[in-house]
Image 1 (cartoon, rainbow, N blue to C red):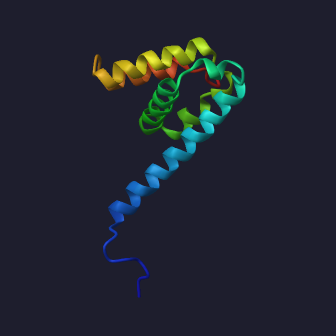
Image 2 (cartoon, helix red, strand yellow; image 1 turned 30 degrees about the vertical axis):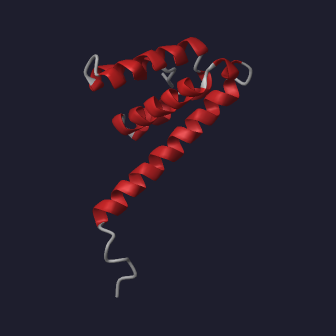
Length: 113
């Protein structure tokens, strides 16, 4: 006998699992960035922080897990954060293809290489 609720589909469970994993990964990345930029973090306004978190979520959904794990959020500079925010604005405006923008975001963040 199944203990699952009949109104919850496997697809719904999969979507929720994806959302939770994404949120957890983005929060860990944000913690690393905030820790690195304790003093400078206050120079970003609330919208910048919200937008940065959003673009990291989009990036997490786009790249494979190994590529995500290779990104070094603790080494990102304020200039790179501003660059990522610029790319995020392009993504929201659909100024270029999302693949092109997200590939640029990957290159803007320091990685393991």
